[in-house]
Image: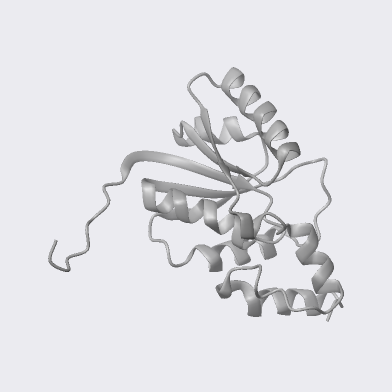
Length: 174
């Protein structure tokens, strides 16, 4: 093509990338990047899981996710207290993109996908396997590293490092 960059035609769909993002990791951003490069509009949504306790407030998690998603013009950051299928129904979304790092994650994500499909017929799940170098990245590990005053920059989006450090310091972790 004589040096011209080939344009990738994005699928005209609205898709969901859901998570608690406590905090957002490079693994999360791999999913968001995939969605942003393949679909017209992406909703990166912070969901509240009532069975989880969070280290970062909703406002902090949203600020981190907004910073991480800033390079993507077609990504909308949002928050929702309810089930994924309800958000999808409200926004006219028919696909959620989820990732898995191991067999346990895959089994769990399969159950969630089955539930969503039953609750909202036509709401499908695309499961993407984590890249090998991201399989050990978890929000839990990052929070522990912050508490131990270790460098988390290899595991979180570059745009969030400073803000994450500030939030950790405010919690007395630094």
